Length: 219
Image (cartoon, rainbow, N blue to C red; front, side, top):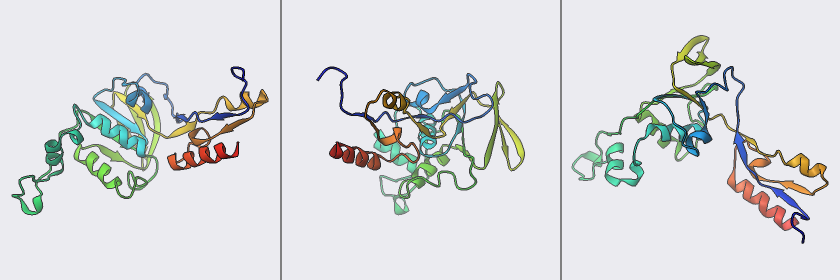
């Protein structure tokens, strides 16, 4: 087979961060979650996170910790969650002693209701409790007005508020990364698309694996 002369092409190129339509979205203070988590871009002491889904919680956890994670230090983890390893306290419980967050963090969502309400049933409470201990301010029902040199301008129940932040991190979901699809098909190449490149909404590894397995069996 000649190089590049394929019978079938499968696009499993994943997703890219979604960029919401907000005035000032291209301001220098704005970062995507990939720039924070993957590229390790510098983030200031005051941060607003747009989007309170799984990605928003992950970024908030990341920014609210400094140094080694307590999950890698048994004693620090037990102190943080108030577990008495000497078993001298009732129920082996004591007052939690979390390390303070090195940043002021606002976790924002457009919808009204519980922040992180769609997180996993068995672990969502842990993430919410962790951020609460770190004094992350969670705000629901937010309308995003604009981003400028002063920070992030929002509206809550008709009341305007300015969050004077150094950075705004966009955690507002993903879009399929499938820019190669149409050029390949227009070139007459049999092309299939699976995973996040097919559908970015509610990313599901199980579904993506199923798509790949069925496609492999069919071709």
